[in-house]
Length: 126
Length: 246
Image (cartoon, rainbow over all chains, first blue to last red; front, side):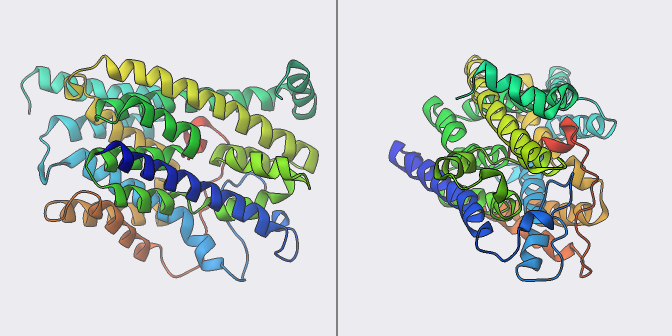
C-alpha cells in the first residue's frame, strides 16, 4: 500500500473517530436533560437509555463492536488468502480463548495462544 | 498538565484503592498496546503508521482492525470498519459530557482520550468531582501507557522476521477475542458473535479481504427483539474493561 494511501486511511479514521467523540460531548449539552443521569453507575456502555430517540442505535452499537471484532478474529484465525490457514493457528487461538475463559490474565492468555501455535509448528503441524 | 500535585489531588479525590484499580487496568491495556505494535509491524505496516494510529486514532479495537485490513490491501474497508467500530463513542460522549464542564479546551482535549476504560471508571463514581477525576486520570494514564506499549511492541515485532514461527499470527485473533470476552459471557453477545463468525468465515472463502469482516455485522440480526441491554456487571477488572482502549 502506498504511503499516501496509508496517510489518508490514518487521517480519515483519526478525524472521523475524533468527530464521533466530540460530537457526543457537544450533543450532550443539547439533548434535554443530562444524559448522565440515565447512565447507571458501573456501566461502560450507553446501556439502558430508556425508551426514546436513538434507543435502538444505542442498544445495537456495543453489539456492532462485538460482531465486527468476532468476525475479524475468526477470519484472521481460520483463513489465509481465501484458504484454510492450517491447524496450528486456530488451535493456538482456542487455547488463548480457553485461558481467558478460565480468568487467566490477558497477557498470559495471549502468550499462551502464540506459544501453542509455535509449539505445534515445531512438532510439524501445519 | 499532569504534575505530581495533580496526582496527589486525584489520589485524595478518588482514594488509593480506586487509583490502584485504574492503574492495574491501565498497565494491562499497555500490554494490549505491546501486542498491537508487535502484530502491526509483523504484518508489514510501516513503523510510522503503526505509531500514528496510536497517537491520532487512539482506539485499540479499531487500530487492530485497521492495520490488519491495511496489511491485507483494503484501505476502504479499514476506514469503514474502524469508524463503525468507533461509532459507540458518540453515545459515550452523550453519557459523560458533564465531566468536561464548560471549558472548550477540556472538551476538545478530553474527547480525544475518551476510551471504554475512562468512560467505565467515570460512570462508576457517585458524584461529579469523582467522575471528573476518574475520567481524566484513566484517560491520560491510558494514553501515555498505550503509546509506550505501542513503541515496545514495535521493537519486539521488528525483531521477528517470521511472525508465524513465534505464533504471532495466533496472538492477534486471541487478543481480539479476549477483548470481547465479557460480551461473549452474555447470551445476546454470544449469539451475535457466533453469527458474525459463521458468516464472515464462509464469506472469506469467496470474497476479497475486508468485506467478510464487515459482513460480520449481519450478526446484529441475532441480538433479539426484546430490549435486552448488555447486562455485563462491569466491575472494572482488566479483562472486562480492556474491551479496547477501544
